[in-house]
Length: 255
Image 1 (cartoon, one colour):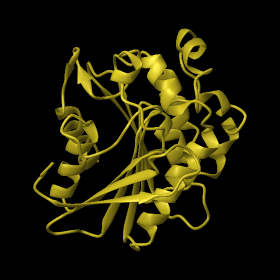
Image 2 (cartoon, rainbow, N blue to C red):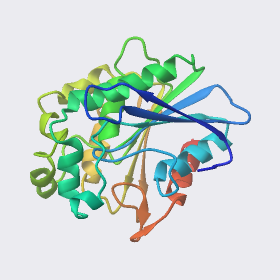
Image 3 (cartoon, one colour):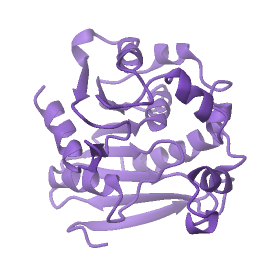
């Protein structure tokens, strides 16, 4: 798992599952004081495994001096093979009974670990559902977010997706916990939103509307479509493309 940087994994307790909250950290050779908490989407993962998209993102952040923290939320240890390679069966076995509040609290525990390092600047970068959680974390009085980044995040998904996804674990309790008015209290120095043009979960309108609803000056909010990328911002044209992560960073650098 050598990625060229010193790494550390901390396992935080969680009331759900048997894995705890696994927080992976890379140590830049020349840290610039910025720490970035990376939050994955629902029923997903964020670790330093070779095939995990967050590994590449963590590496290019660390190369720039940013200290990345990858939060992998709690679950029940079940392999996909045990579920006969059926994604829906694996989701139910791994996350069945887990609430959105528990998912949120896993991420909050990771954030508190980051804050313990007293970062000079803090980024919170959430993908899909992780973006919703990033917004909630940016409402906390004790948190000062310099850069809030949403990747493939909206509040209401496309109708056909809504019917399939919303009854699933974690998502089934989302609407009873989160209200549209939550964005009124979000505080951040600047906010960025990315959406793959081939995203089949959230429309461009949904992603733009969420960013636009944040109460901050318009010049501090930027939306970027990523041409050909999917909802996860992991593939382009049906093929894995780690360069999507580089593209997002470059677009933010260009501001």
